[in-house]
Length: 438
Image (cartoon, rainbow, N blue to C red):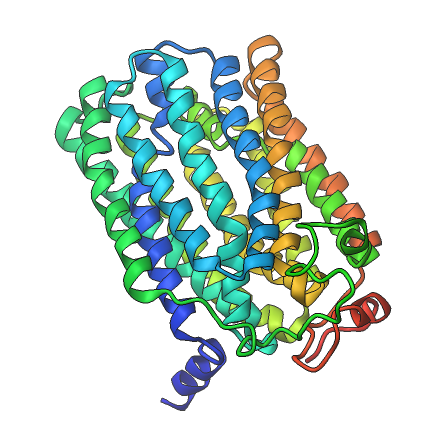
């Protein structure tokens, strides 16, 4: 019992209502989104007969175009301090766009639906992450993001499991996805999406500026009294932040859409039902890892764990490249889920450590925009490598980019510790080389 109490104490400090409410929102949204995200490329390839290059263009365009909103949304959120409004608009837009899949008979309409979904994500992501930071003591950011990621991924587990059940009931063990099965999945996916928007209305609240653990701005480059993002504001981000952006951008160049993982798994022999069950395992690994790893990062620092995540990613992608049969696919998806759980929880907390406190949402917007804009070239390159060289080529390219990004991370991003509420944001520039709090 004492051991259980100690574990509970280590995983729950600083968890607030907003963190839990936003976790519920993400859980419901992921039930909705994950029912579709891994079968959309199969719908494109099996039903609409789109090539891997076209699928890469669709996925890359959707992610990159949406990323243009992430920086603006984050900066606007810092200026008006109405993060809840932007979060609600973002989640609502994603729900509405899913209805377009009902009438999609050619790939351009799928592109429009994907754009609507990703634009919603672009609007909500930076304000949501900043609202989690606003609602959490600095020393508990890792555990807060870890809990949020665990709840998000729990929704993904449920969503993919429901999708597997629907596919099994609708078409059994068929290797290709049927059009009627896909549209049934869309109908069911809309229900939790609507519930997620209702959860924002009921459970999420903005944090007043005076109640936030973030320090008050000094007046220099104040995001609420100056234009959305000035040159002076850019200069307030420390060198370590920009090195992390550079390393993350290089990593993203090889991190093409997960659509190629679905296609590769099918190409190696998995039918749709088994693929979805494997992805359930991927999400379970993600959920199990994220919360305790986020808490661990509060104790030992973020950089070693981000480095671990990128190493696991490189190994998983190299594995997809060399796999010669479906026997390896399950293990590789589990590795990929472990990467996700570590990277998403710890990486977001690292951004909060590096960015000036009154420009946190802007910092998230910068990181998300750079990474998102690179999804388009990454996915186009992956599609061309698949079509013109071999299905394994995109995965070799991704592993190589991850290895190069890992070197930049280790060399250029020195360890940092979370800022407490009494420390001015500008002091981060001088303190960025300090070792993590233990």
